[in-house]
Image (cartoon, rainbow, N blue to C red; front, side, top):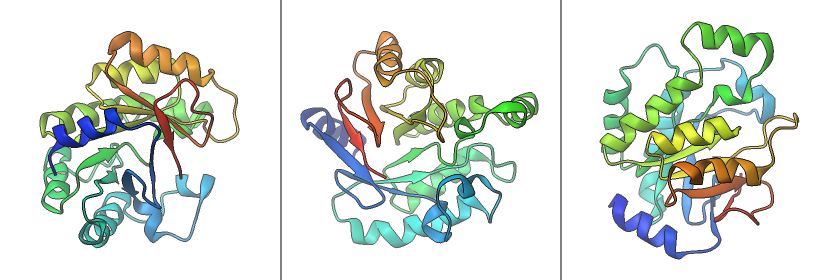
Length: 203
C-alpha cells in the first residue's frame, strides 16, 4: 500500500479509528496469538516479533484495502531490525507500531532496562528505521517527552496511551508536545477522550 495515499486519507478523515478489530487501520501483534491481556502481556511469553509477523501474514490477505499495522518489539536482541522491517513489508504490512512497549513499565525495572540500552530510545530508533523504509509509523507515547521524541523521529501518528493504571500527563499536554515538533503529526488516543486529538484508536 502507498504510504502517502494512506496518510492523505487519514488526514482527511475525522475521527480516525483503528485497532485489532479494524476500522481505518488494523493493528496486529503478538497478543493475537497469546491468551493474555493487559499487564500479563508484559511477560516474556514467546517471541513477540515472530508472533506479530505470523498474525500479519494471516490478517493482510483478509484486510482488503485497510492498512495493517504490525506491532514490533524494538528491544528484540535476536533480530537485525532493518531486516525484520523489510520482512514485514514483504508480508504486506503497511506500517508499524512500537508494541509491546517499555513505556508501560516503570520503577526500578524500567531503570534497569534503560541502563541496559533496552529502553524507549530503541522504540524511537525503530520509527526512524521504518520511516526510511517508507512504512507508516504509528507510535505509542506515554509522556510529553515520548511524544516529542517520536515526532522528531518522523512518526506519522502518535497514539497517547494512558499506561497501566498510573496517572500521567494530561492527553492534551502530550498532544501539544508532539505538535510543537511537527504540526502535521496525527495525534490519536488509546481508549480516552479524543477532544484534543485527531481521533481515537480503539483496542
